[in-house]
Length: 364
Image (cartoon, rainbow, N blue to C red; front, side, top):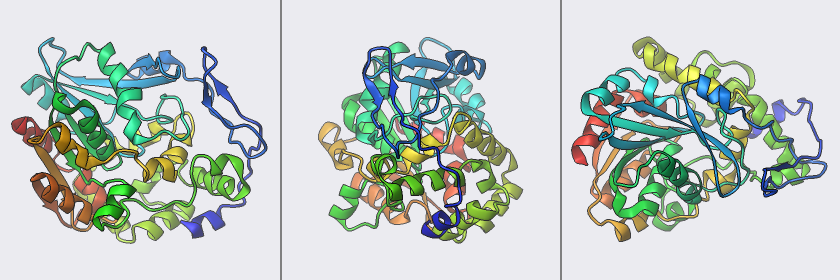
């Protein structure tokens, strides 16, 4: 990462003062000054609707958040909350091969929000995963009339979100499904696990208030400006970033493109949709105060629901989310697991997703 940052410092920086305030004059984007990164323009709800999505303006801070409904439209449909992987939007899961048909066949409706800064969900610097179920998800469920129990799944960066949902909603969560999971820094250190994600050496404050953090943040946004290239034949800074963080990923991605072309095409399209407004979703997702410091303890799930079924699919060759995190979650919660090999992080995140959903549904 540090090498790729050094390679990209030629980037031209926008150092304008920045402030985003909603209709209620509550500061969503709190930074101003010489190093403040200019926030993207407000989102247009009509574009979300044209993409087949829905939206809500949150009562807490006035941010606009997009979300997508997939599957059954029946009033008695079972609800599954999907927490997308990092870089993806709520549109992805319903596009994966066989998922829409599976939902119709089993009368399941999937609700999948896009995280702050991805797709047309408005940016929020410094958001924490532990507060996301209350700040973003709960108003969506209320708007959709979901006042009863539901299933929840998460993939990669979405897995701590799914864990936080299980902690926050307690008895309302019927089953927790996790693909290529990781846990936050506090728990990792407490139980002797490695960090679940790379420490990017900046947080949401430093990238807006000092030179080094600002340079790292802007260079990183430049690197992820075309995230679909990560899943093709990346070059330049993108290739350097992957080679630094996940040395085996390039060969695994080549194999996935050959053997799972449909799923990979869905993924490529969606991650580029994630940066259609800006790369600031990536910027703040990868800041340490969001990526690593989750402000909740996954072990608290046991306090709220001691017998929660937990499904964990992970990969022994995962270079993104350490397989030790998946193994620990299986042991901690007595979860049912599947261990992948040979497809790395990306393959274990999406291959056989209908089978994963079926396992989740059967455990509910």
